[in-house]
Length: 361
Image 1: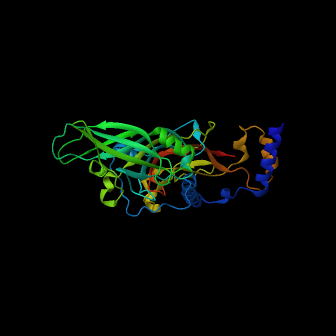
Image 2: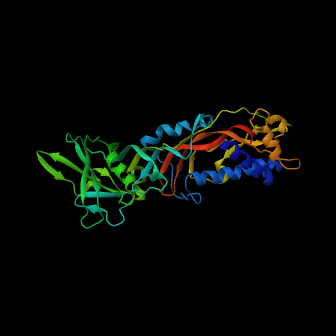
Image 3: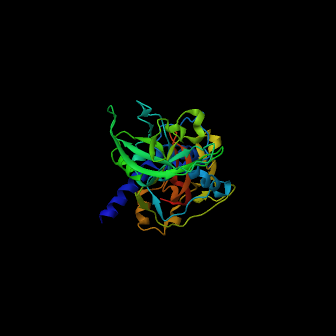
């Protein structure tokens, strides 16, 4: 009875204010849908405005090589799900190293700083790797490089350092180096749990030669730790795999699908292509466009007999009011690869971006 009373209250409210979208022509509904999609994307990503990425280019780095291929035009299809994420369910984040705000070097170590939005910090870390570009040696060298990553625990002078992980890696010789990755999940997990702490780490590279530890005072001679533009192709970065566990269920419904030139008057789903290049949104790397769809049409009571409490709907909407609205009844996600306001690259699912079914409500 409580649920029935709530339903009566909602329907009386809807009946009193009417359904403004019901009065819109299909062309108007289409334009309204496009504006709403733009607003929804920015709101979901926690952005006040579209990021400015002037001077930023799509990097060719190992974690993203496969993703670029997935976003051809044919791959711009939505992910059909019965469980739809209530918020942005991020899958992968590429965060590029930035100069430490107070210093660059520390006793042979190079310092890197990272920034994440408040919305990103709400996620849970599944995996985290630091990627560094290992420079080549001009001649064959049998001695591997030892690379150690430290947590920078304080901004005090001198800062407290705690070793996180160490790897040994052989150098390539010739003119080309190669990427290496180091597991830093414990460090990044701590950052996300304590976002007020400095998000900085230190990198030290050394070579063991003839039984002597040669601590490299110039770590950059061995690995690229520069965040300057001239080394933009090899800037160190974090590859994060994160999870958002907030979910909500959606129910199956039936609905009509109509072509754009249809003369159908009832509530129907129509095709709608969203083109981000037409928006001027160059900060979205992929997809450049996708099929969103939109709902339009009338909702006569004769088509509502399948729903419970239809007589209440009729009482709540007397003659002369607009009646129930034609609106999305099932939505699905799209995958998206984009720059955020910190110039990090984010890959994940954006919920509620594709209208799968329309219905009267």
